[in-house]
Amino acid sequence: MILVAAAGAVLGSAWDLLHVRTHTTIYSIGAGKMPFWVPLEFALVYVVGVTGIARFGSPKPDAESRNRCVAEAVWVTIVYAITAAGHRYEFVVFVLAAAALLVRRRMLRKLVPANLLPALALVVLGPLVETILVSAGVFSYTHASLGKVAIWLPLLYANAVPFAIRLTETALGEPASA
Picture (cartoon, rainbow, N blue to C red):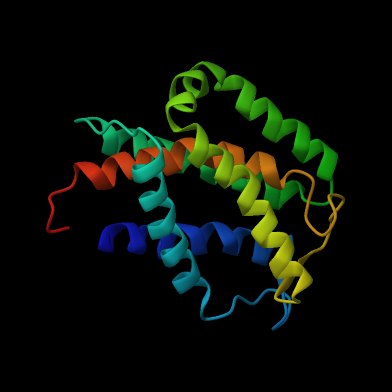
């Protein structure tokens, strides 16, 4: 789980930084700045997520798990970059994020049913938690037409579902000492 926490701290923070630097989101400490605790938050979220997927899903680790995890990380990076670059045009980003899911529908049809509860939890709870954090004044979206968050946010989380499952497979395939 140490590697999962490290992945969360690094990848989660890097992806979040795309939103921070493009002013897609603004933390209460000021535009363009990320609080020191964000990597710790992502580390914890990733550990909880992998634990939940392992317990309530059916990830299937194999020799290709790590390669698939890397490919999914690249996919999420691209979708994140689209949301960051286009955040002023929420509905365009919404359509692009939905199209990204359509492109991957065959893979999603294979992967999601075996991990339905964790997938739904990520897509529903992710935006819900962000809504709570926005309501608490921790950060805000500069363009938010789904209450306090961007309308494309659930689709960003949906695009991250395969990454979360592949990360879990990779973690489960690691030696017990890792």
